[in-house]
Image (cartoon, rainbow, N blue to C red; front, side, top):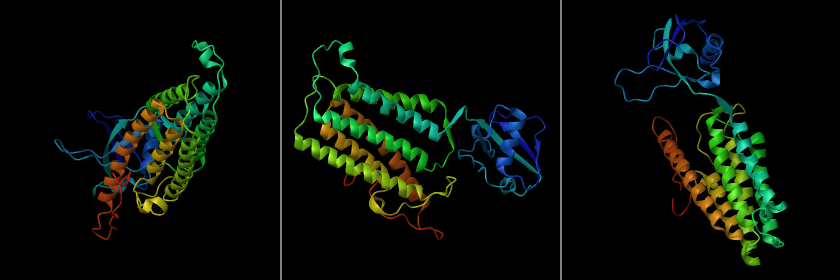
Length: 310
């Protein structure tokens, strides 16, 4: 079977194409491209079927597990695919580890070290109980996220663009330092003991619920990360499409009730906005896939992320 690989501009990536055996898969094609080009390793490649000129449809992306003949449209001897370079890639586990490690290490610096003395606050610092509990809460959260990354999550895509490491780290690390600065500040005024207990109690309950939501989502996928889209069921997923985001938002709400800083609430608003956009996209995608037609199940009526508002 001859496979012609072109770039999106129409030029041949590999002159003369590639000759592959009849049972070759897309993964075999990617490996062959890598051998010939050296630079473009498989996770850096995006292969699609060519579109007709003027077509506004989205191109069909070739799945690495499928046989190339499934995309040949009756012509089993020749196939043309369009190559796109996705740029340098990094595994999702490395991406998440980097973005979570920053807040985990940065926050304790403001609690344990004399950062504020270097910033001009010479008076002796009094550490309030809520600041200590907030430290434990914060570190538990990000340690949990790192452990979930390596032992719970199953990713539908193996890699992410390397540029996302810098963007995500800038987001998490900056907010981590911003919140830690104000929660541990010498002039910080603590909330009442009752408000602290209510906030941290709500937050811890949501952290445990969030962990269980991640377990349920992980069980929807096979160990290699595949399995296609499925309807999440069980626990809070019977009520909310993105219960994992719901519990994530409310656990930060609990943290902010207990600590009461503008920096913390700003982080909550930004994070909730981002997760709401993700949740809306996922909700619409699941409703479109599970429409009750041609034997497919119909997606049940559920809130998207923040009942009773959305």
